[in-house]
Amino acid sequence: MSGSCSIKIKNVWIADGSGAPLRKGEVLVGDGRILALEPGASGGAAAERILEFRGAVLAPGFIDAHGHSDLSLPAAPEAFSKVSQGVTCEIAGNCGLSAFPLTSRNREHLEELYANYSFPLTWDTLAGYRARVAECAPAMDMELLAGHNTLRAAAAGYEKETLSPGELREMLRLADETLEQGALGFSFGLLYVPGKFAPESEVTALMRVAAKRDKICTVHLRSEGDRLLESLEEMILCAREAGLKKLHVSHFKTAGAANFSKLDRAIEMIREARERGIRVTCDRYPYTRSMTQLSVILPGKWADLDDSAIGKRLQAPEARLRLAEEIRNGRSAGYWDTVTLVSTAAPAYQSQQGLPLSSCGPDPALAVTELLAADAAGTTAAFSGMSKENLKRILALPFTVAGSDGNALPADERFGRAHPRAFGTLPRFLKQLLESGVSPEEAVRRATGLTAEIFGLKERGLVRTGAMADLVIFDPDELEAPEDFRSPATPASGSLCTLKAGRTVFSR
Image (cartoon, rainbow, N blue to C red; front, side, top):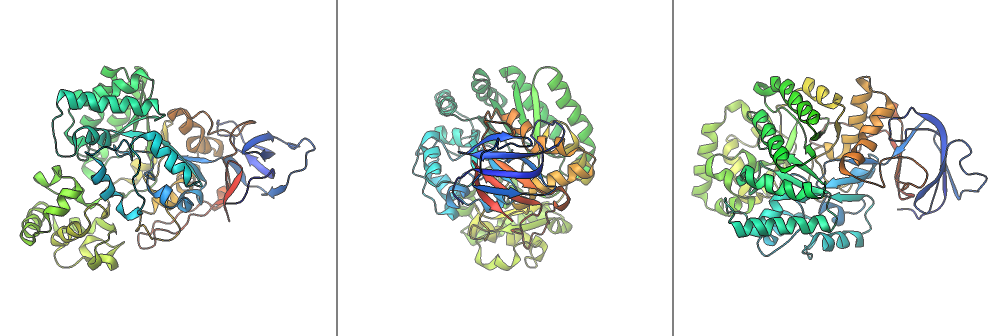
């Protein structure tokens, strides 16, 4: 990262993040702020550096509305996968999972979950976590949500399905404390243990804590497929009962061909909620394959276990054989072509990373149990089953912003492999909007100003005098991001230079 100095950026088209028309101009940056803009911005002052980009677009640093860099950023503060796209800020703590608060009930589990980053979890609170991250001087910023799953586990652990009144009160106390310390709001991950156990009354109670401070709640719905509409209705009803005004749907999608037709009704439900005073928004990555822990495919009671418990139970060979039989009986032979092994620490399957599970030997179901026995917490998979047409429609919604659902990663693969979205979401998002006829200024707004508005970020998202000098210069004609699971760390193209608080953190 280069040192801070005064910089004049010349001959650029300014997309200021508000949606205002592009205008030709120049920008003067100093002391981490935008000092002046428009033609002749320097006012006669001599800048220490001149950056000239003929015909490129200058925009606010992109804001990734949905990331999971909670531990990867302090472990690799260069954040190459993000800053090479032009991202200068990420909303982290998503899908119910945050790195705080930590107690004796959840610390060991989270240490195991984040073990591959080799970054000790030495804090207890959001304040302590934030201070520890700051010590690492990361190349991008994170704004933080407090995860419901982490809060719940801090109060009651991961195995308890029903909270006692005292445990519920403790969870809500911890939740309010995180808001006091600066959390943007709360995230729900209702597909995962232990959030999946939460009844509507518990969800509503946590939303009330957010509503009292006019904060946002984001949600990974209980179902994004067969029960998409029921899951969306549940969250809207909980928000209405809680008096919550800001509800954000994470990675909005229709999963599975049988559910593609549900998009019309889902959009209608969101619009109805917005008309009734709940500002429902969403984020989306511009890919049709999702990614999460491989363990989400497990059947029956196995689905109610956290990854730590799954890994321990599968150390017994007979347990692997029994589970493989359950999996085999519940999946068609063709299913294994639709699931790609993204990353694992399991030694026997290193060469299969980036390939369909159908390539993992003659019995993919047994391979799943071996992968989870070796690395339940770290084995991830990508799942096909989303509609390209629905993706275009979701991206076209005026309340959809860009969210990668990915980590900030180094240029190498020392933390394992990732979905290509970790390196390509923002350029791909902008390219798809531009190709669909969205104006450059509106495309930029959906990656900057609108995201800042949704999450209440006061210092970000706009190019204006006095604002933080978080900027990206990009060539809209060169935006490209490959989708290659065998080489997922391939950088996107199009971003020419990224500045964080006036410092150059990436240049091409």
